[in-house]
Image (cartoon, rainbow, N blue to C red; front, side, top):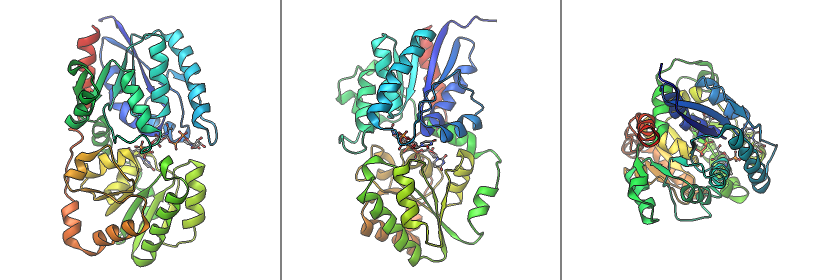
Length: 372
Ligand code: UD1
Ligand code: UDP
């Protein structure tokens, strides 16, 4: 047996990081040259554990960082010192982070202080506006500066990095690992109950997710007003809302939508039933990053409740539309999809600009060439 010669620590903090890092972790673990260690900061707790369990990943180290309604400064400070202690113990040859959360930014900084090279998975996404999304745009700019390998999902992400002056040889267009995860999971047979429990066979389904910090307060209330208006207009439809556990979301959504009979407020779904729910949905209304990538691959029209997006490819392809957190625009655009089959068909085309399902294999090959 070939002795493992390289130690790579893969870091996951939140639900989307785990979904998108899982294919990389599984691919690294399948090699004979890498000692792949998994560090869960557990910036998220319950919804991180759901994903890790689905992919059969057991963290080697779990920092259990999450606190109720954690603040950004407190989270950042605790992550920085806790991750540093892990780096001291583990002494990895490289560390991989994914995306733009506080876990990513703090981990990249901790690695910089210890001169450990970082690989950034999903590098180069930009809106160019530090306030949208907040704080993610700053997190990914900083993570980019602090990284050695930039695994860009698309050519346009690569262009963003080149424009910031990164060396071309440090940027690798790999596709987004979310499509690897989606293809893996969407072929699985899972518990049918979550979909059937919430949705009758003949009902039209509008799936809604929202959690962005820049939408907290008045924008989130406007989003809820739009959903209530639409639910009253389309009584034949069911609006399924898996509510994000952040109390700034949960409390507002519960207060504003809890009493509308065809709005189903449910707990966050495990990834497998969530994928099944996306497949069952007619339209998806979201401010999520990952859902903007997955839904087009499943042929589902998406209205994005954000002012800007760092994922322009599906907008350019005509299958995703930006509607902001503007009540009247959300109502108008969703109504067009519900009422006009021509509009619906034009947006319900299966396109997958974000990946082909082989991103993780490409990342592993690049790391092998670079580290061995
Ligand atoms: C975080 C990320 C965001 C990412 C999102 C994915 C930051 C600053 N934000 O936002 O980029 O898009 O995750 O979902 O990194 N909570 C629970 N249980 C959980 C998870 C969260 O109770 O399993 C509650 C806790 O009260 C926690 C709060 O949600 O304090 C906020 O969690 P946090 O990770 O700080 O922010 P998110 O809004 O989840
Ligand atoms: N997701 C899930 N269950 C849910 C809602 C979302 O498994 O109830 C998945 C979704 O398919 C996507 C990821 O979580 O892969 C997106 O996470 P989120 O929207 O929380 O974060 P973002 O992508 O905006 O950072």
